[in-house]
Amino acid sequence: MTERAMGVTRACGLVGISRSLFHYESRRRVDDEALTGRMMAIAAQKRRYGYRRIHVLLQRDGCFANHKRIWRL
Image 1 (cartoon, helix red, strand yellow):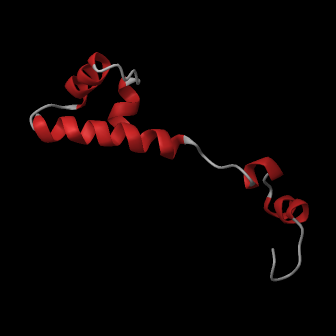
Image 2 (image 1 turned 60 degrees about the horizontal axis):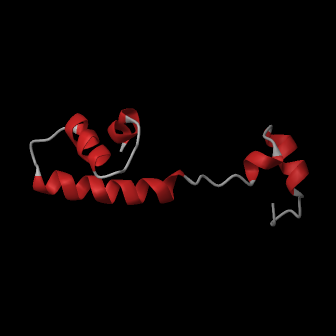
């Protein structure tokens, strides 16, 4: 956009996306990094535990996250 002095509205229109999508920043990464750190600490202590057991241990520690999210990470 800056090389050809094209505005955001026009560039998004040409590509076919909305302006809000152009400016979108996912907040998932920040939350996932903290959760991943806790998961890695548990996994280091309990090497044979899978995502289901890690999910239960996280719930006992007070970190309530969906089991599908634990699987994704």
